Image 1 (cartoon, one colour):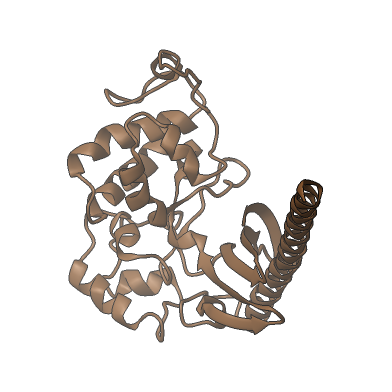
Image 2 (tube, rainbow, N blue to C red):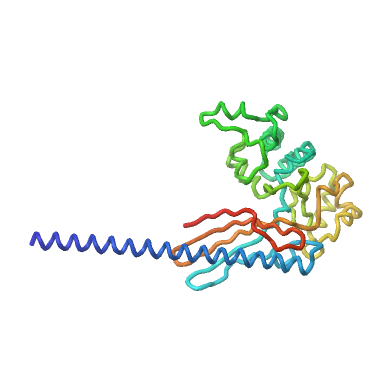
Length: 302
């Protein structure tokens, strides 16, 4: 009986191990299939953006097909969902590395002051520390600035990047930044590549959220801006000059700050296949008449 009991225990252990192996294999297969579906969504988004440019290359707005999220798209043994975000509807932190960093530092300062929930007193030192993280020198930009000397004295020392950011998550490494502040700030900022000659990227007035638009100038008429925002999905601005003529944008919002078109988009996609899940985040650049290209990608899997 003892031998039979041991044999039964061994057989049960083998069955459990085999079952676990089958489950692991199924999960890997589902994850691989989810990854291929996510890549398919990426190609689909590139085609949508190309078709949008073919239809109307002069204006990008929230009323166009690319701006409509897909909440649920059934596929075999699962579902997909995703959305496209205009990254030029956000403040580009890397503009602080351009030829006029002071102008963009003031814009960042006003952005801090217009985001609900952020303490205005935290804005000046954080704006200075962010600029120092991006600029190429080792000279603090103000009393709140931070360079290598501030970071090398930490329990886990590191150096300031002193170059344009590759991801907004780098903000979490900057002096004075906290997870709570980052969560409030993240929806309004991006880290896009700056052009040749350190040319800044511009804000698309047809897609930017109110705090981003209010950060453009201290002289914006809030009433006229609110009126434009209430209509822009159906009546987007055709030119920046149109908004300045109507008084929505003051004269100090110069042509290098704003636009009505967009080059950079963020695709956020999720694929749920069986027990597998893949979330794919792709930065897509649509420049000129060429096909949209993926210039950055990050992945989250389960």
